[in-house]
Amino acid sequence: MITDSFDPISKAIIDPYELRGKDLPKVDICIITFSCIIERSVRENYPCKQIAVLRNAAGAIEDCIMSLDCGKFLAFGGAGCLDKEIAHGKVMVPTEAYRDEGTSYHYAAPADYIRV
Image 1 (cartoon, one colour):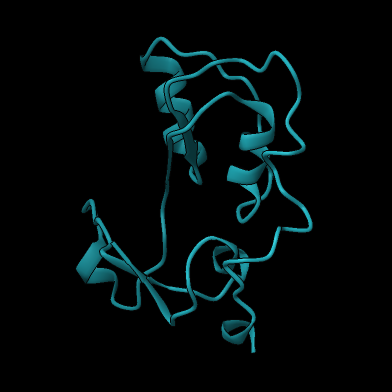
Image 2 (cartoon, helix red, strand yellow):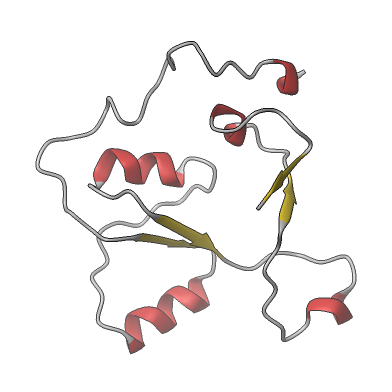
């Protein structure tokens, strides 16, 4: 199982920090959103510069590590909910997430959930 494969000691086979380019753009924070509506609103209402567009989710931060001189990342967007009445029209801040994608096992010890 994937939860048995976490290895905090061995060197990564693909390390985004080793694949970084030279003279990378320096940014204070990299913001990644999974919502085109939020992205459009930010571009229209705040002074910002779009550096890149990424089309995947799990590897987005690793792609940013290779392309930017940045140590802080904020990733957010919409998500589904089993009961629409709970979340409709509300901002929800999760305190834990079920892990089912595999990438997070490169960065945190195995567990069914990531807790903040």
